Length: 154
Length: 148
Image 1 (cartoon, chains in turn red, blue):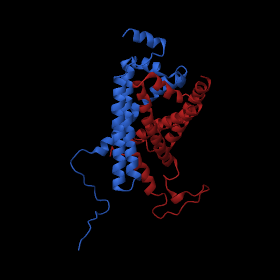
Image 2 (tube, each protein chain N blue to C red):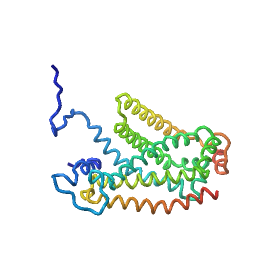
Image 3 (cartoon, helix red, strand yellow):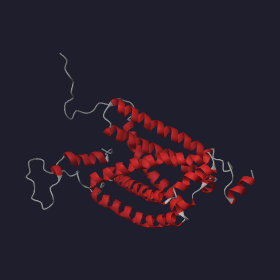
Image 4 (cartoon, rainbow over the protein chains, first blue to last red):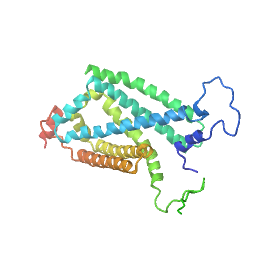
């Protein structure tokens, strides 16, 4: 099957419980997980949750962003007035959130593609989630100070 | 007496011989996603990172970019790919969470309408852009528009 989805991969984790086939649950020092699944509460689930939330947020920003950019067709004054609001401190902080969402969605999207198409993708999906988080942190460490300097000093 | 036909568990799903749109939608999300990473990171680099970032954006900045067909096409391709990618993602979410048939239908028509209207609007804006409308706000624009 060349066509696998992340959903099917991780849903496998949901339905194929570690505790199936009557094996007694191993004594573990870890806190008990709900239903003892491979998926719920783990990297795969959070990857999916954040991908949805950031995707929806980006979609609604995109709707607004096409409309505000369309004002260049109305008049320079109209465009400059609206883009001026993007340069205020409050919107500047909002842009940090926007870039945070886009960068996570981008890196995690590449992770999903690797899970789907790379033969070892499912084996390394947890590691790749933490790589996504690490790259996201690095990107934000580079972007946030520079962006906030631009917002608060111009 | 009426009997309800329920397929046996694990029986293969029967599908018509038509195009498997869900498969192509699935593939589109991945292909457009890779391209969008490049286009949007480039967009953010030029508009939010270079120079003084967001504080440098104004009408003249946009006029400067769209004087070059390279950036016109960059933005138009980004517009189409991103809106269809986002619209398809929203469709997936509606399918997952909206319960009633009617609710799902209305929400999906709303998504389709928003995507179609913004693609048409955005494409027209990029390709019919006139840097000389209104009062030129920068020296570069005054020079450019004096030549017209």
